Amino acid sequence: MKQEVKPSGTLLQKFFVKGKGLLKTVYTPKPTLLVEPDAWQCTIEKWDIIGKDSAALMLHLAEQRLTETVTASDSMSKKAEIIISILIPFLTVLIGFILSRDATAFDKDALGLAALFCIIPVCASLYFIQRNFRPYRITVPGESPQNIATARNFDNDLTTDEKYYNLVLNQLGSYQDRILTNEEINSTRVENIRLALFCMMFIPIAPLLAFLLVFLSGLVNF
Image (cartoon, rainbow, N blue to C red; front, side):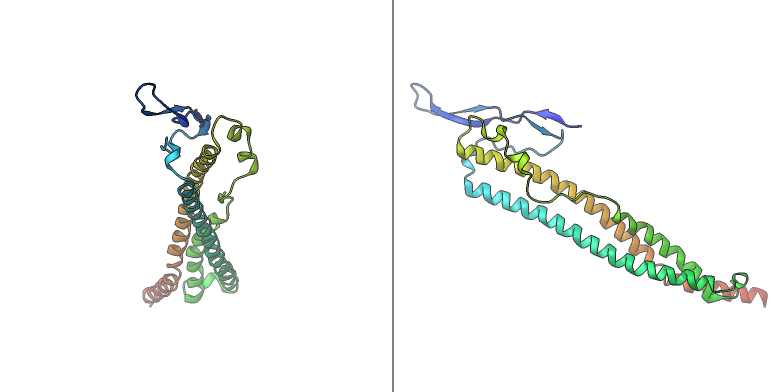
């Protein structure tokens, strides 16, 4: 559940303390933001020490990291497509081969029994890989105009530079949330691919098991 939080102050003005000539900083609250209770929040209070170049670099690096998570997601989609493009035709051939065999003689039909056993890891692999095709929402770099061209961001007492820093820091918070969301989704999809490949490793074992059972059955009936 989201809650309203008022982060630490925004630098609005500086003035000299009367009679002491000391530079004193006055902070007033930032605009209220809607964030998750455990969401990352920027702890920088003195925005004037950031500098525009540093702010631009931070934004660029955050966008680069977010783009990497999107690229990783695309890569996993391609891997899932390759795996499923192999499994479905293979499963079709297996089913057709099994239906062409004599169902009453599987105890003596090593090939038919091998095909039957192969269906189990193939179906298990398909189960895990199809989970990567379920709806998921990967967030991308950038921001909708409706979220940035707002009165809250510009109709305030901040200076031009501070408005720029405010936009950058708020965008960094948004990017951090998106990065964590993408990484969580990618982690789940990687696990699905790993489980699918693990199940596929049992496909070559299935024929060996089938031939072993037929061989043992022949010894028993001998």
